[in-house]
Image (tube, rainbow, N blue to C red; front, top):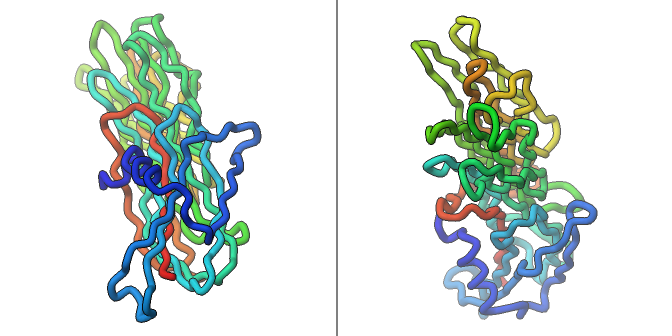
Length: 358
C-alpha cells in the first residue's frame, strides 16, 4: 500500500490546487489552541470514466485531504459539499499510524485503518471530514537521551499519550523511556454521526538499554487489533506481558514464574473513542513503559508492563482503535489496514479521498 505514503500524495495535490468550485473547504482545529499545518492540501481532477455511468460526458471528480509528515499532533477538520446531481460518492479513509520506538532496530507502531466505501448522498448536503494525525515516534538523538515527545495524534478519537513517568534517561542501571503514543482515527460524518471511521494504530512499547544491550517492547497493534505481547526470560524464569486489547479493554497484569522477583502492572482501559494512555507509572522504577492505544470508533487499550525487580522492565504494545461503516445509512465497503513507512520517524497522518461522477 505504498501509494498511501504522504509525500506522494502531497506531490499529486500540489500539481492541481483547488480547481473544483463544487465544494467548500474550511479548516478548524480539533483541539482548542491547536495550530493548523499549512501544507494540508486539497485537489480535484476530472478524469474520463469508462462504463462508470450511462450519462454522456460523465467524468470522475476526485479530491483528497491529507496530513503531511509533521511534528505537530494536530489533525485537520474540513467540510465537503456534495455537488449538484451527485447521489453516490466513493471514499477512501485512512487513520494515523502509531508511534515507533527503537534500540538497534525500529519497533513499529501499528498501522492505521484503511476503509474504502460508497456512501449514498443528497446533492447540496454537507459532510464533515476529520483527518487524524499519527502518534509521535519516541526515538532520541542517542540511546542515552530521552525523547521528549509524548503526545498522541489528534483526530476522530485521539491516540493515547505516552506516560513520561516511565522515562529514566542517563541514570540508574541503564537508560529507558516509555512506550510511544497512539495514532488518531479519521472519519466522515453527517450531522455529527460517523458514516465511515478508519482507526489509528497503537503505539510501540518502550526501550531499555544497559551496557550497550537493548531490550525492545512489543509492537503496536494495527487498527482493530490487539497490541503485541512481550516477554522477558532470565535464569529459566519468564514473564509474559499481554498487549493492549482492542475496543478499550484493559490488558491483564501478565503471568510469571513465582520466584518472588518479578512484578507486573496491568494496561489501562478506555471507554471513549480516544486511545488509553500508555502504562508506565509504576511501583517499580526499573524499566520502560508500554505503548498507548490508538483512537477510532472505539479507542484501544494500552499494553501491560512488568519485569524483574532491580534489573529490567519491559512494556507491551498498545492496541489499535477500531474502524467502522454505518451500514444502516446504506454505507457499503471494506475495512483493512494501510502499510506505514519504515524509513521515517515523523508522525504519519491519515487521509480522506472522495470520488464522484458528474
